[in-house]
Image (cartoon, rainbow, N blue to C red; front, top):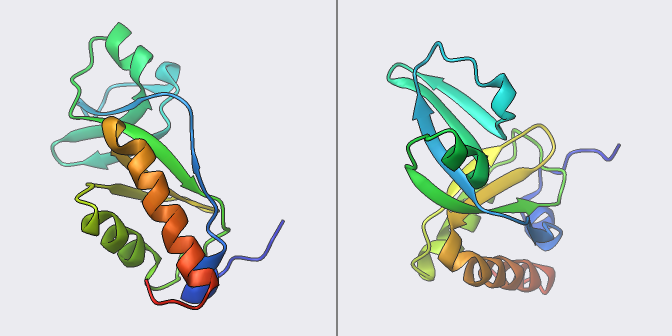
Length: 139
């Protein structure tokens, strides 16, 4: 297992964004609902309910409300959870292209959720950000 990277320049130069297949849905269900059989990609408990990120076919089959339909991009660098600036740099690059994003940091990688129809544009922006960082060009 690789060591987590915390240096922003190194994170950006080695992030290797990868577009995962499929479409995903952000949805919200009652806080006490057991969603384990739905195999959610992620969950987050809030006062208002349980937010789940789930593959679109399962969400539609279960009749779950679709709050955001997203493509999922994984940054394949082992990012340190205490690293400073990665989320900001990614959000800034996508903001310049008018692409909304929702970032989920997990133990090993950061995951970027963007509107499905902008997935290829987002991947191009992130790949360009990585290339510029690898050349020492500011984001």
